[in-house]
Length: 288
Image (cartoon, rainbow, N blue to C red; front, side, top):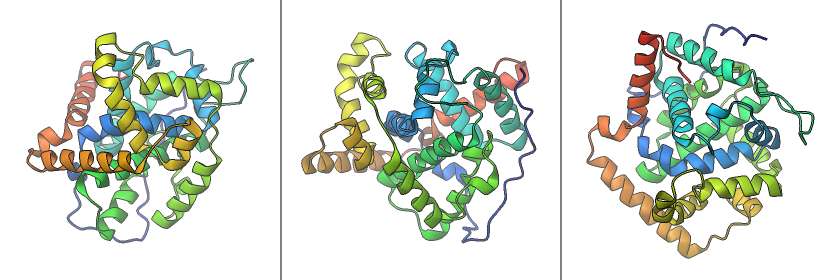
C-alpha cells in the first residue's frame, strides 16, 4: 500500500475579522510547546481511537517512550511547518508523515477501531493543537484582541489541512469551535490503560533517571495546570486553588521573561526545527 498523494493546499479564508498587521511569527513561542506539550498529548489521546493508534503503533521510531527526542523533533517540526511553512513544504511534510501513518491501523486485539488517515480523528488532534497554541499563548502573553484571535483561528486551519482534514470540516468560526471543543471534551474517555500511559508521560519515564529526578515533579505540576478540568477529573488528578495561584504566577513570570527576549529566542526551538526541515529537504534526507 502506498500513502495518499498530497492534494494542493488551498485553505479558504472565511469572512471574519481580520488583523491587517498580523504576523504569525509573533505568535510562535517555543517555550509553550514544552509547557503544554504533554497536556496536549493527553487531550489528543483522550479520544480512545487516537490513544490506541499511538500506543499500538508499529512505527517504533516514532514511539515517544522509546525515542522521546526524535518524537519531539517530529512533532515540533509538524507544528512549525503547518503554521509557518510554504504550501510546498507542507505538502512535503504531509507526504513524509503519511508514509509513517500508513502502518497505523486497527490490530486484531485492539479494543477500538482506528486508522491514522481518518480525518475525523485528525480533526480532534488539530483542535487540541489549536487549543494548546491559544491557551498557552494567552497564559504567558495575555488575551488576544478579537481581530487577532479571529485571524489566528483562520490561520490555524493548517493544523488539520496539512494532513487529511478537509477545510469544510474545520468549525466555521471561534464560537463554533468552542462548542465543538466542549462537546467533544466532555465525551472523552480515559481508561486504566491510557491513564497509566499518560502518567508515565507526565512522570517523564521515557528519559534518563537524573532528568526524572530533577524535572518530573515540576512537569507534573505544569501538565496538571494545563489540562482542562474535565481531563484532570478523568485522570484522577488533584488541583487546588492554591495550585492554581502558583501556576498563574509561574506563567506570568515566564511571560515577563519572554517580553525581553528577541523574537529569534522566543521562537526557539520551533524556528530551529523549521530550518532543520528545510535543510533536510535540500539534502534529500528523511523528514520524519
